[in-house]
Image 1 (tube, rainbow, N blue to C red):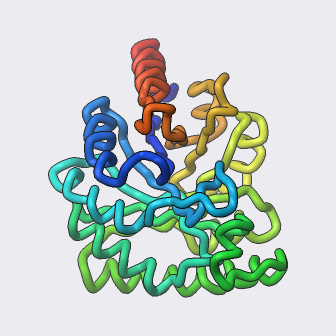
Image 2 (cartoon, rainbow, N blue to C red; image 1 turned 90 degrees about the vertical axis):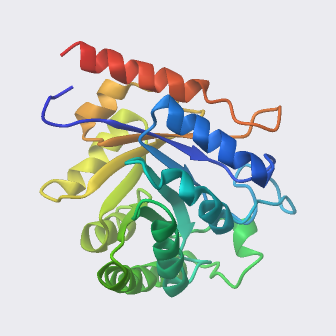
Length: 258
């Protein structure tokens, strides 16, 4: 690991099963462990669930968590809100509100959407081509609105684009975003990172339980600034933060080996 570049560790919490009131304690515990960032995902139906299952409203939960970050440098964000079902003007104002309730900074991750169970509850376009055109149009508008919120409200809202599509998603991230979030494995992640050579975007990777053999050094060498682990609720209606503790320990060992 280079001394010139640090590696941040984050956690993404899924928004179902665990009671909404419990997220304050979970996030507080994650912050105490030393994570650099906490994200919620944004789905109407759990991405890991079935039609008819319910996710809590992500933006209400984010507002309830913001005060935990008020006197901290750690970051709060969403990874990601689908622009297929979320209006960019509303997102920009929600992000500004949460930033002002917290430490002034908020990571607004967005994606193109396309999860069928979310789409069936909204008027999101089902056709891929139409959805990607909507994504491009809404992302451009979101960029303008977020820049206006930051200027007028004194906030530091950062737009991240999540997704690995080389035709629309990645080029849109290069044009409009402050950061990009991709996926493993490290070899594929490294290939996508090449599109961002010469940019100043914050580069992150989102790992799931399928990435059990994660290698922090490999992702760092591939160009990651931020490694974020997504957590499903555990069987006890809570979150098992032990994978996060393990990642933080691994990072400490990497730093100690310099």
